[in-house]
Length: 487
Image (cartoon, rainbow, N blue to C red):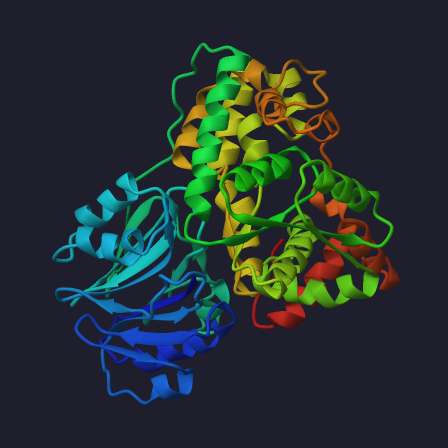
């Protein structure tokens, strides 16, 4: 886990100092080691001050800040045969071999085709950049789990793990690197090619019982893959269906699981989470907050997610607190249940879509929600966890799990327009895991409401005579004064 920075100077000027400056703006993502490289030479240092003492000179450079989440994490960039690379994230199953060595073994002689093959063949959460003699080749996993951004102006093409590093260069039109793409970046700009995608498989004919049995198997394998390189993990736990399923599967995987629940004072959901933790026999860490804590956290959340969006901020704050607790109890990996609602029809709005547009249209909506999750969810959640040097891993976002879930008939997810619970097949999985009905058949409540952060944000805004969105936009403009804030 760490931070990527990469630059191509279109006029041929030396951008090594600029790359190091970008890394300085991303130190919250990693301080264990820092590195910068051309395609033939690399400089690794224990501090950015030491890194600045380098005679490297190139118009094409890449850099990396390292945060060690596992024993297999090593300083980067690393050199290959006439190239250097930085890689942020994991392949799953996770191991030292399948991170850098596996990637390097598949990349030969600056071939975009070989890089594209990685995206097609290897499952995981990752982004990377490869520095060659006359270009940078970059890519991002098909789901867009690991954030990566790009932008250019008349002089510079840049890549970074967060938008702020590119904004600091004066690049204003910063965009999310499209998932599953390979990009070639040179003095002429960016060229993208789609290499991997999330496929909508043919809908199969299958019973609820058979589907639940197979889904349980796939989810267990996915969870094992995401914890096999650690002995202890934290889990963002609401006491609801998604987090309870992941909790029990993580427990079955043999790892030491610590549940974490956060919320404002007097939130009933915390009492339920504590009761649910006892039911599944796992330890829980519960932390309550007040409106002053929200006031302090909101600016940090805005700085990290880089958007003044009310819903996203309302979710980012509890994740920020959860990752903070995970770090304090010594967990470098945080599991969560993101992706379940999109895969199994969990949101209430799907009922209205089913009623108005029909089953076939809703299947398409579910698929579109999955492929757009990188913008709505992952680019929000990963940065707030990375700030605390905690790596977020999502068992539902797995190639086999997603392919199977997308192939299921809609009636295994939503029984009818009056189905208040939805996610039928996943609830059957919970039954098979002997999770109590008080958990597996509990009505969903969105995290920003369950934790009380949405109400607190609106109360803070009202105290200043503003709408909640207006209050966030005002704060955002103070944090990033040189930008035009957009919702």
